[in-house]
Structures are given as structure tokens and as C-alpha cells.
Length: 281
Image (cartoon, rainbow, N blue to C red; front, top):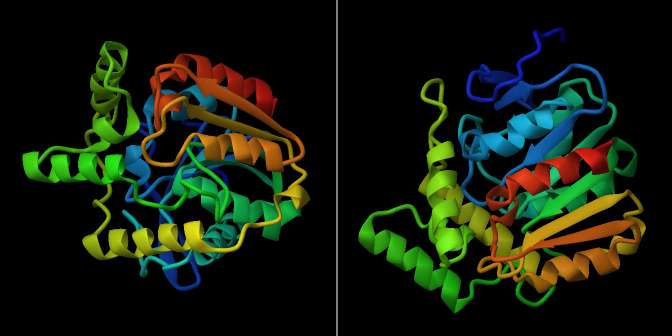
């Protein structure tokens, strides 16, 4: 498929690709040459929830594809209740685009999906970026701790988005970064997709819980070069899970950002994007 090069995610058109009878929404940004980077996003997120500084920063040198998996945002179908099924849909989507090899960038739940893809289809993957995520069956990964539940409840009571509480720290730097981050998420003003439904969110919660309770994957078999990144105080997926990923994946490099949480790679996008470009290069 021939497409014009688009370097700004806020103006990239929403396209659709049929996958096993369902249309999947996606956007395609950056130069056409080179191995594409496929983004796999977090719990309840849609293609409108990616930080444009990260998407556009990486797309300045690499082709970036962001998409909504089955039943999420602009994509049709029902959200799967298991991470393995989400990975199967992601593989089918990548194949449907006619791509033989990709780099993966998985954030949070998307990091779970990326691990399964790399283990199941090693030849489809060249390099992996895993952020704010952790291995299956590891303590603090796929569980709902008191801080996470309290922040979510506070957002529900105050009718505010809990993402600043969950993704960033409560320090002065963290609060300033939260305001800037939330503002960036609204830079795109048209052609936005619908929010993930309550039914879809419940299915994702079930998948996250099953990931935490399942037997660990054999990550020693994932021999791809991997970049693992997180903030030092992740309230959603324990930061020690990132250390464990870097320990279990043979060719992994670990980056931990100070005064940062689950969304540390967005808070520190000015440091993270050059690191990713260097790693993918």
C-alpha cells in the first residue's frame, strides 16, 4: 500500500484495515523506508492516547504505526479476555498490512502483548521497547494495589481523569509534567476515535489479572534486543517488574527515570525519544 509520508500524528488520517472480519483503526506516521515501529497501548487507551511528543519524535526518523486492537477505540469486535488473544489479533493486523518484520513498542498492557508476540512469532520481530510493564506471574504485575485503587476511586469521585495520578509523581516536577502531558493528549482536535467502552475495559481488566496469575513465560527464549524503561515509582505496574524483565530477557538494556512513575517515558520524552532512536538504529 502506497501512502504519502506524514510526520505529524495530530494530522495523520485514521485508516482502517480488515482483520478476520473486523475493521481495525490505525494511523501511519513517518518515513516509508526502514522497519516500522508498531505501538501497543495501555489499559483503556486508544490511538488518541499516545503522547504526540513520543509518536512524532520517533516518527521523525522511523515509520510509526499506532492502532486500536480488537474492540478498542475505533476498531470493531469484542475485546479479548486474554493477553494471548490480544497478541494473536496484533499479529494478524501486522500481517494484514503486508509487513514481514516490525519493531514493537509496548506500554503497560501493550508490553504484555509485545512479550507474547516476540515469544510466539520471533521472526516477525526485530527489536522490542517495553515500558511501564512487567513479566507474567511476577509479584506486583497484573495486580491491583491499594495506591492504584485509591487513585482510580479519587478520579471517579471527583469526575476527573485519574491518569495524572496514576502515571506521574506527586512532586512539583511530576505535577507540572502531568499538566503538560494531559494538554498534549488534546492537541489532536478532529477525527478522533471513540473511547473504550466499559465492557471493553472490564475485559481488559480480566486479561490483566490473568496475566498476573498465569505461569511465567520463558523470556530466556526472547533473544531480540530489548530496551526496558520505567519510572522509579510506578504505581500501576511495580517498577521491580521492569528490573525482572531486564534480568530475564538475555539482550535487554534497562533505563529507569528519576522522579517518575508509570508514564515516566512521557514525562521524560526529551530523554526517552533519543534513546529509543539510538536503540532502534
